[in-house]
Length: 212
Image 1 (cartoon, rainbow, N blue to C red):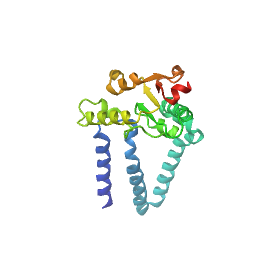
Image 2 (cartoon, helix red, strand yellow):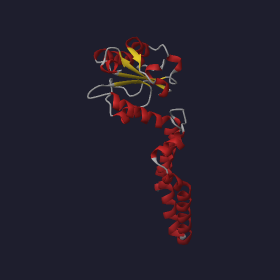
Image 3 (cartoon, helix red, strand yellow):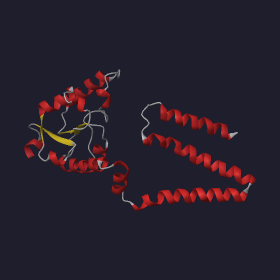
Image 4 (cartoon, one colour):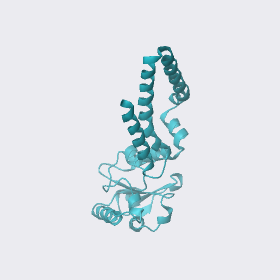
């Protein structure tokens, strides 16, 4: 019976949600295809026995979902993001566009943060091979030191023009070796009070430093 496979799928979805142990709201999207397929199969099976009832159930589900979701389609992408995530992602997008106006050609960016949107919105290349800095903060992670060494090697080899520090991220790691590396070589860019909770730093003696 296909329902056995569906049940296995449902169990696997819940396991996938549970394994990280965080239970973030977006983790539950793994249930979406499971419920969509299960609901569709259920209506098809019901149609074999009671056609009228299956049509009533199908139309009722459709109208219910439409009633619940239709309001989102009247929102712009910015309004949708503000409603769902608050101002954080909109801020990242705005800062990414500012980065795009600052950096030219092959000039690069490094962020002490976990916001890949900064790269996406700025169309800027990474200065190291890592999007995420969080593993370099995890004392228990077996690859922590290897990641730190790799990042510092890349930074020494080709220092980026711009460093972005997310001040409300990893507040217990203000003295982290990667942050210190930048603080020793970069200076704050004017206007950081408007970029909070992010702060821009430019390489001393670099192109942006001379420009500003």
